[in-house]
Length: 299
Image (cartoon, rainbow, N blue to C red; front, side):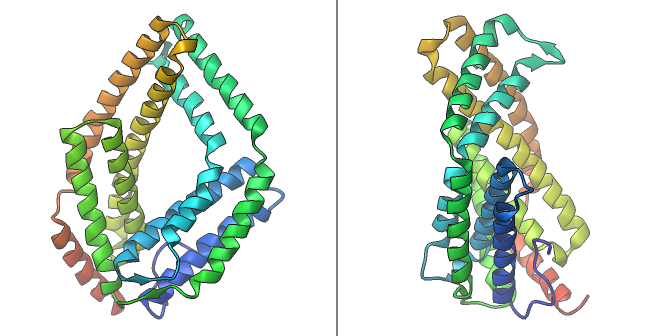
């Protein structure tokens, strides 16, 4: 089933529980399927946990639970990321070390790639992927049993409106902070809030399918730009931390290439963010409420 509310759901609470259960069931199927590559299964579980956490943020202002579910799904996903993060470091290096189709001083940068690959190999050898999947599956089943106890203190669009407004306001605030202080931390915070908004657009897409699909695509594209910015920041930190194992010219060249690429990404991200987050949060939530009423009445 699609990751969105349905008119057939009896209530907002029913939507919440159904969507969460569907994501958990898909995650556990990925863990169980012997035909699914273990790395692909891990990626799928991490993706499902992110989607559930965005769902929880959407209804968070009115959610009543006996357990910190956001923290629970974050804890399920956290141990699964190490190997993929190591892969991302190597992929990010490969992208930054090639500019306009030509390798950039490959002889100077080669030791950095060798170090990243060597560390990835050591890490992968230490990871028991199957044990990680077994543990994640067990925790997901525990979470699935709790879903029946998730309750919303509001109904209709009231259950979603505050989360829409809060999430949008946080994204706008994070964008302004990144513009004023273009640090890696600020861009990463903006990325997370942008991803939340993209998920909220998917969850509520039935309210106005065409336009909200287009806005969702814009938010997803912006999230990719900010994700690339974050990957570069992680690569920069990794290389600087390993400076004792590398020649200074390699570290300096890598830093310069990373900085130039981050600036190029920022030049693309800010205009797109300005368009996406141009509305006032309260006005956006009010419009979505009116469209919810039309949709709920069968239009």
